[in-house]
Length: 185
Image 1 (cartoon, rainbow, N blue to C red):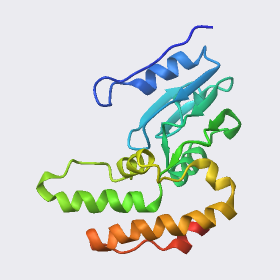
Image 2 (image 1 turned 45 degrees about the vertical axis):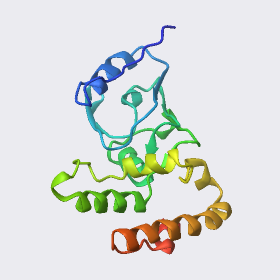
Image 3 (image 1 turned 90 degrees about the vertical axis):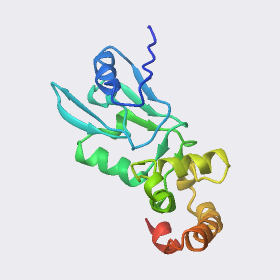
Image 4 (image 1 turned 120 degrees about the vertical axis):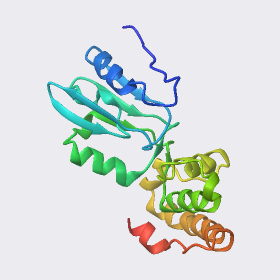
C-alpha cells in the first residue's frame, strides 16, 4: 500500500484537510503528527459536513483508523466536543499517550502574553498551543497518558499549577488557576 505525506508550506489555509479527505478514501491509516486546535478544516463528503480542529480528516471514512500523534498538543475539552458535535466514532480514533495536553494555564498564558505585547502582539488564536509546546520542549508538560493514572496526576498537578500560578500572578499579574477545578475536570 502506498504512503502519502501532506505537508503545508504556506502557514495554513492550503486545503490540507480537503486533500487528506480525498486520499483517505483509499487509506487504512491517517495520522496527524503536529499542531493543535489552532487550525481548522471543514470536510464535506457523502457522509456530511464535518468541522474539525484536532481530529484527522480521515475520520469521515468508516474503514480508516485515525491517529493523533505525539507531536500534536491536545486540548481534551476540544477533542471531546469535536467528537460529540460531529457525531464521530471514537473506535476509529487513537490518541498517542505521549501527546502533550493543552491545559487551562496554557490558554491563560497565551492570552496574558498577547495582552502584554500590546501593539506588537503576534495574533495567536489564544488557544494555548504555543505555551503547550513551550512546556513540551522544556519537559514540563502533561501528556495524555498521565490522565490514565489519577493518583500520579494528583501528585504532579500541584507542582505544575503552583509553578504556572507564580508566572501568571507575579509576571503577568493575572488571576491564578484553581487546581481543584483543573483536577476535577
